[in-house]
Image (cartoon, rainbow, N blue to C red):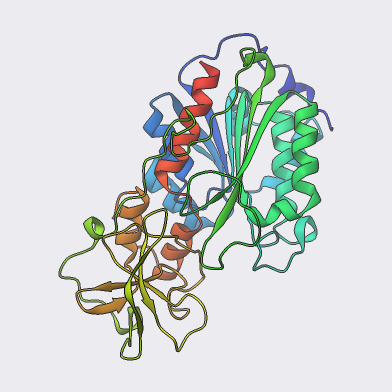
Length: 366
């Protein structure tokens, strides 16, 4: 562990002092939409006072959605380097002194199952280590890390959590299927399901004896129930004229004799045989199985939003429909370049999930 600079460390509050409200939070690599900033607002007890984002177009999205007051830090690695060196905090970084909660969503391509597998040696994978160092340097009361579940195949995930556990934090970790409850996932996932890994840390001095993080599941084991994913139909945009790039020829579609209803609710009607992946067709009366991040919406055929049989047409979902289903304002990305909007939405966890995780953190800190 590399110690934080003296100027920073001397301002940390002792862990036995009850946290004041509202708690101050920092959000790292939130990709513009930032489900955890929405969760903070939903809680009424947390304010995001600074965030890290290096891409100007995403900074603009973040500020439009979450306000102009938060301090933007453009370079995570530079920030960590300066804190490690014990530099005096400049005026724009003074907000770091009173950070109670950290939300960390480091870039995932170098860890994802579909990525190159470079891990921390990759151009973005190295930012995961910076995120772990930032936790040590800032010493928040609690943190939430979200990553692709592909990271659990890399030693750095397990080593980093073990290291943080050996320091000041009680660590709770789970993987989650995007269409399912938070739970461990065994074996290889279905390629159309996007999985994520979560780690929650809470300072041990704040935990009551025997206290544990209750992962939001179905409530059957006494855990707080996670709101079921919403049906797609109420979020459909009525009367819209969709471009040809969103509509797919289904003249040769294979339709099942009866719908295949998934345990989590999605209703699968059939598939397009001319494609080998991302080809399943769903009914809008059920929830969406997943939303995948892609650099372009039109990778055939359903790689971004799945395929939906709506009013006699097989099509993708519009970005406003996607946002509504995920719990965000449907117009949150109005005016944003279409490809970027789908990418930003696909990079995010659903709002009901981020809010459920933060509520549980706040319960432990109360």
